[in-house]
Image (tube, rainbow, N blue to C red; front, side, top):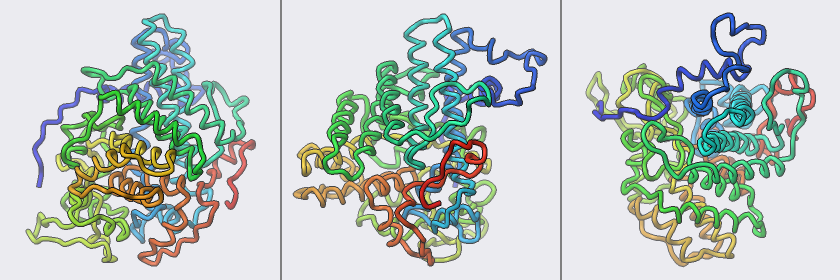
Length: 501
């Protein structure tokens, strides 16, 4: 059944499709022997001259995020490599390898994570290198530089969590000379991420209006910084990063800019994009420049979506059965039955049936207004206010050797919205378990689960426990990182491979 909704888009994302091809050339992504001046176009040396050039180049940085999140680059390892999802078992071999940890450096998903991130970093570096030379309003210039630093930090945060030590490139790459860069320690990469986000938070505004809504804000930079600090704390009870994460999350809370929607379903509605719960999201345009969240995850072969469902992976019983009775998020998150458009019969879906046509599907980001396969318009919610509340609660628990009253208030705000009773009187260990469960249910399919399991040291246990469909994953301790892509090692002799691969 189609839903009618007015989702006119006023954000800068309309411009990105036009700007991306421009940046491709301007950021040295085209063939080096192509003479752009012969075509009457601006070259990289003549483009960055005006405030409009600076704005256009900055807007185009967001397009790389759309490429990363539209399909599976981040979602696949966070879902099938954790305990949340099971891939279509006769489908893509590289997706299956992520699920059963038969990982090699040739895995295409792994290679795409690396390549997409460094493409985004190069584009950010171009802006950071060239925009300062433009004569323009200094406050606006600093905003553009803050946006570039925020996005560079975001890409490096993905890289360091997936690969550990990675090359730290902070200048625009202009040629192949001196391009063989060795890996930098993860600690140094994290230091740079923190510096970028702190600088960005100083430069970025609290909010935007009109066509600028959707760009990175001060709250987005501080919120991501809180998440970075939480990740750096890992499972070290004595880490100073716990207190830093709590303090930074509190800064976001005290901005009084963000709030929870009353109903969980409202978070993902087209009409609520860039709404009060969103710190940062990756935006798409229905049927024009969309994502694959609807067609890709619908039951395989079902005709309830454009082009029929792909069923690329299904919900694990471990995740599906983790919800408490009465948790309102469950019905929003999953498709458990549907009415066949052809027969009118009700098709019941299952987490146990081996037939991918009868598998429970991820559904909270399905765009039922879309009419074109692979062109859904719902956002990818990169960072939400609910995440800030749980970061705050977790960091308080760890830094205070047990949950404080404020920690209970933060987590119970989410439980109340979900229709659940508040938790109370828990010790440090039990509260930690409650936070992990809450994160799993609140953010499933939002690119968090694998990262959460790795940072807390729970990955091996979770993967070995979720053994449905004869998974028998050959996971080992070194699998907390992915292999460095072989094509990158072949191209860069300074790179070394991660242990175990």
